[in-house]
Image 1 (tube, one colour):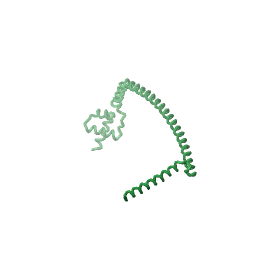
Image 2 (cartoon, one colour; image 1 turned 180 degrees about the horizontal axis):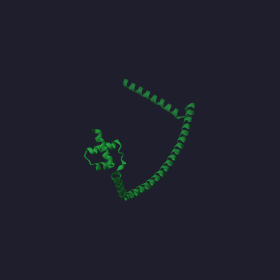
Image 3 (cartoon, rainbow, N blue to C red; image 1 turned 90 degrees about the horizontal axis):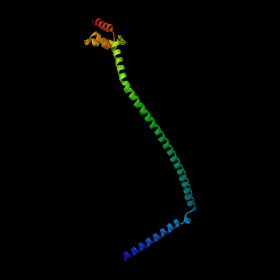
Image 4 (spheres, rainbow, N blue to C red; image 1 turned 30 degrees about the vertical axis):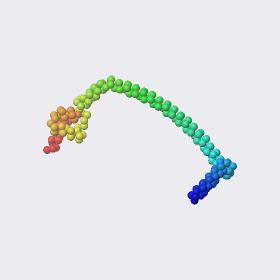
Length: 172
């Protein structure tokens, strides 16, 4: 019995709370129940939100247009670069073909120039240079002939003999 009284009391309390809350919800749903300062604040907020949304939409459209313009310019430049690359590759192929044709002639000319520098024009080296004198003496110590030393050092035979003789005189 006591349990039944407690349950009925709890039930009545729940019913009262439910009615009180539903009454508050109906007051909020009724626009006349909202205070004027709150209503004005909400209206200002909505107006500012609409202005911001319009500005955002305009900015977004401008950004879209700018992006489209940049993409078109980039595609144009890319096409130009591809064309330039094709022209450059063709020029490289043509140059390679020319080099292959001229390669044999150039190779022969280089060999001829090296031969002349090494064997026909030995006076190009400076006999007074310390590195030349050291090379002549080193080759002489190895037992090379004066002619061979003259060719390798790019000197005249007399210059090689002079360097060797001076070394013998001063080393005694």
